[in-house]
Amino acid sequence: MRVVVAGGGSVGTAISLDLLDRHHDVSLLEHNTATAEKLKTLLPGVNVMAADACEYASLAAADIRNVDVVIAATGDDEDNLVISWLCKQEFGVPRVIARINNSRNEWLFNETWGVDISVSTPALITSLVDEAVEVGSIINLMDLAHGRMRLIEITLAANAPAIAKDLSLDELRLPDSVRVVAVVRSDQPLVPSPTMHFVEHDHVILIAREDAANECSVAFIA
Image (cartoon, rainbow, N blue to C red; front, side, top):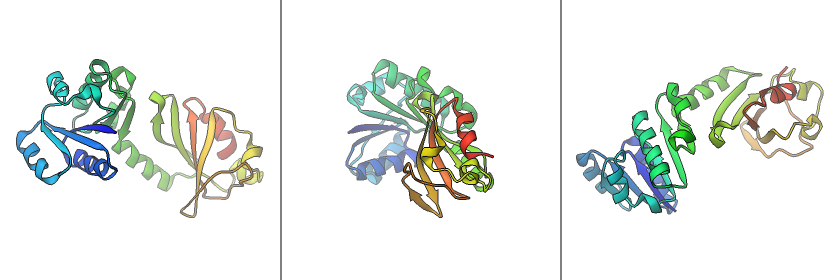
């Protein structure tokens, strides 16, 4: 798969190396010429270009039109939005992934700006903090499908309906808008089955439609 990473900072560099290890064809665009020259030595196997990914000409020179995935990974949200928009609207890149540096800007990272998937490190860290202290609450891990779906986690309290009534997953009769995709129990990931029963402190991972929080609450929150 052909992948272009925009931004030669620590994040973009780490992503490029990981993708290279996974045998992808990786190009990295870095606007600072001196930094780009250093990266050419540090990243053998990665096609490093001294180019500003916010400029149409730079993206055209990188043959973006024939790329499968673009990752806008700079440390500036405005740049990541511009890169995403150009790649999607001007070059028709099938999949655009954008890094969010400031969680207050998260609402901008959607299909209007050409973003297929956004990754917010601040929001993820906040959710992990919430996970450590919140039992019996819905923790949003990630938005999917342009915000129409959510990956969420609920840590079950002893009085959660699923536990108090000793109901199996099948007996919970969850609606089609909610799917349990994994359960983490005592640090072990479990594949959910229709006969699975739940215990206190289970971390239940679900994919749910954005308006389906109430359906999750009925089964897993007292």
